[in-house]
Amino acid sequence: MYQFLKTLDRRWIFLLILLAVAIPIYWGWQFPERPSPMVRSVFEAIENLPDGSHVWMAYDYDPGAQGELHPMAFAFTRQCALKHHKMYFMTLWPQGPPMIQENIDLLKREFPDLTYGEDYVNLGYRPGYEGPIKLAVTDLRSTIAADVDGTSLDDMPMTADVKNIQEMDLIINTSAGYPGTKEWVLYASTPYNIPTVAGCTGVQSPYLYPYVPRQLNGLLGAIKGAAEYEFLLLEAYPELRENPNAREALRRMGPQLLAHLVIIALIIVGNIVYFVGRSRGDM
Amino acid sequence: MKRTVPMIIAATTGFVLIMSHFIPLSEEWGSKAMQWFNVLAAIAFVLGGSNLMRMNLQKISDRRPGWGYAAVTLIAFLVTLSVGLLKVGVQPTSSFPTNAWAAPYNQEGSSLWWLYEYLYKPLASTMFALLAFFIASAAFRAFRAKNPEAIALLSTAFIVLMGRTYVGGLMRDILPRGMEWLSFDSMTNYIMGVFNLAGMRAITIGIALGVASTSLKVLLGVDRSYLGSGDD
Image (cartoon, rainbow over all chains, first blue to last red):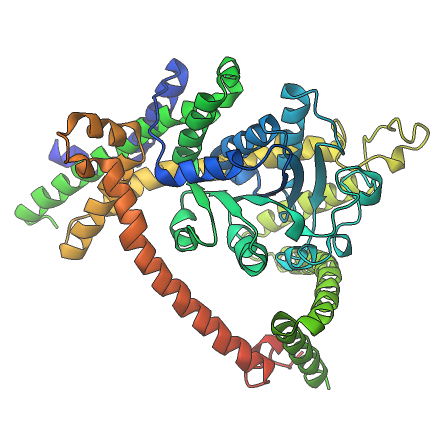
């Protein structure tokens, strides 16, 4: 056994992980969540805004991170739609526009009573990393003059009177790296006191914790944060329970549980092999 | 001249941006500088594309190791670029029923949309997903309790891994009243909110001080490394 484990082919480990992810997906394992105070503060920041507030939806991620960030982005969009907030979608990532488009498609599919240009608008991608943020916070039209289809901001009811991002009641950012949450905090939220909440990938969350709670009202960390947030959303809006798409993050917690347990087991077995080998003088 | 002019541009723009942050009257100057920056950032795509072509063509012509990958990169780049620029497969929209060129380049069903949906998206997602397999393999081979520091790291990883699952919260129901802090999710929140927070704040402040001093050196012309060697 020791010899087998010492020279274990990594393809066995890959197979184990494959099964750990595939089995819960196949059986549809889902667990109730216990939302943390951090997730509650994100939920309440959106929920406590008066209906019809103006919300800037900065979705800065690409397909590489969509597995981790799509569920929280969809949940943000759903909550804003249910609260009838005015949504301004924008991305600083060149691969981001299709990510926004999927949120626009969600609005068209699940909230057909909302009207493009009156309730939500797609402002598309702007190059220049943090540059567009610095411009849009003082003069929106100096960096964005039209929506993604070329319609002038002056010709749409919800954008006609908007001068800059300082007029927003909240910024929601979903970020997979640079430019992302940190840049929105540094160039928009902090200098102009705009309330901001964010969702980010697991590897990013330790870097963003220092900004909570004064510069960021709250932060959703990876799929776990998204699952807790979805749980709160389903509790507050029972009509969403009929919608299987509103449980995307909750569905992904099953594979996460089993994969984490497998990784912990692998660490333990790896250490047993190490100590046995050391006692035998093999290492 | 080749080094002095860019240095003056960089220093002037830098000082204008600093002034615009602290002096409200000069805020407009800062906005102007940022507009120029955004225009330059868009032009940088052309520069980046040309550089990509030059580097990869050189690799192919020299038959350097891995030149086949360079060829794949170039073909993918040129196909995507031409399909997007020429709006291949784009259908006229109701706004402009006679002119397909007026329709968006990434319209659903267009060739660029197809490339994005069926090539780029699955490939990017796959690359990200593969991490799970390599992390598991690395966890088995490299995560060893060799010394006290490694034991501390292992224990933290164990708590956070468990705290990020359903099991983490489940413990809270099993533990007696007053001992809930021993549940994995509570300990995870404590680790992230205290140890991680303190460490990250120190690192962030350190980085900020470093960035400030380096920026000042660039603006004052002490550090000129960003201008290149000047040989070419």
